[in-house]
Length: 391
Image (cartoon, rainbow, N blue to C red; front, top):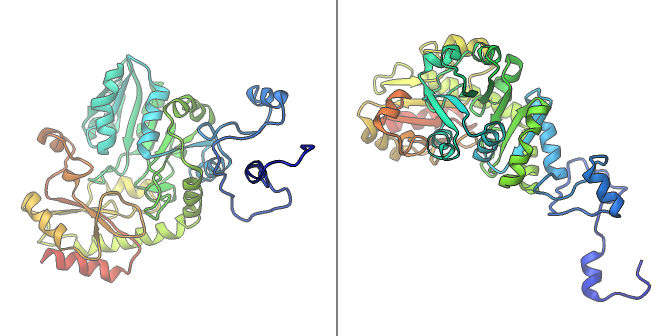
């Protein structure tokens, strides 16, 4: 303690800092701090040597994000989890953490647009190439795997067609070939699907969507074996893709209601899809829970529920889809998905924007598609809204 009375500025800055030893909060406190204190050189050296549980700098780690990672690992039955400032931060850090110049990624031709552009336009600048496969070829990638293939990246259900892959079969083929498999489980969520238990090496989530669930946080995460997750740490540190502690706290709060939210998302989406399946005003309704869906059998075998995403296709292309889009009232016109609010989007103008006609055709994405993120509102209101928008 100082022997003389300090100035006001010094006293205001340094008073009451640090943990309160007698506080026992029910929820995880928000450690909104950039840096952490050490008692001595020896204390700092112990941190560097890895023999202490202290923290150094919030770009590296933070108690708030650490607590969230424990929840996310539990959700996916994983040994470890790592959070990021966005889903794309998670995807890029995973790619750069596991791949080197000269390596190849196999991926479905039908994939989220951000992943597609990263693989096609950005990573090739660093000597990492991608080969896009038709869905049938990706179901068992054994024949497609080459000497440079190091990673197979896939989604199930796929955005926005909601096509599904046999996860165990695909993961098994990757393991037999000593190739890593990474799956984007954003659409299904850990409540509906557990890819790690089916043999996938790493699971990625855009936490922005269902895991947060309230349309107010941008975040990403990767879960899996601790050795693989730890291998991503240098990429996260150097890219600076860390999640803010306050955002981590909001995601942690959202996770507490994941199960009850997903039960309502699943029920509303299935009922909505059933209500319009076979409607003559539509070309098709895509939802894995419908027997008419081409992968219904696969989805039923590996999913607990079929999720909150429904894609409808209108005859008449983008003009017809645009008219529907302009008429909706309960569904809100916005990108993204997975919040409690129902949203509608036009894939060719959002997630698949900028794709060529050939690329869209390979992914089975058409201009007449409208992607519906079915929220937890009153079901009758959602059905009535779609019906009036189709008139």
